[in-house]
Length: 97
Image (cartoon, rainbow, N blue to C red; front, side, top):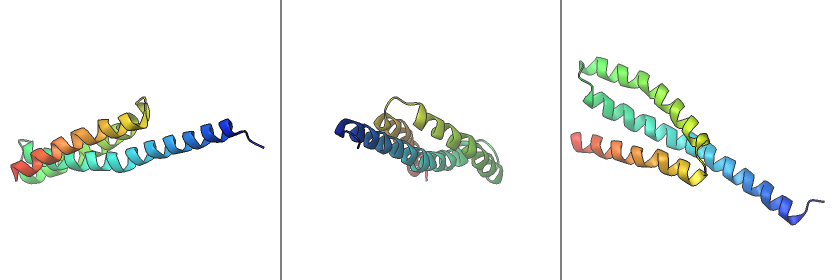
């Protein structure tokens, strides 16, 4: 039978990992989407080329966001690091439209 301390540590590890996975999947997707929208408007290319370039860059951004979610010290920091740029880029995109 597992001791109470061992169960708590195992449960805490599961919650921490789940939070990082959620940050990587949902926070990373939101960041990639916000960057794509912003880059589509800012890149000095023809509109179709800007959208295509921004869409291709979103794969790199999403991969970087996933790596960032697991490289940070705590799950809370992972969420903060992903959501602050997402909100800033989303806000700038809304202001530009």
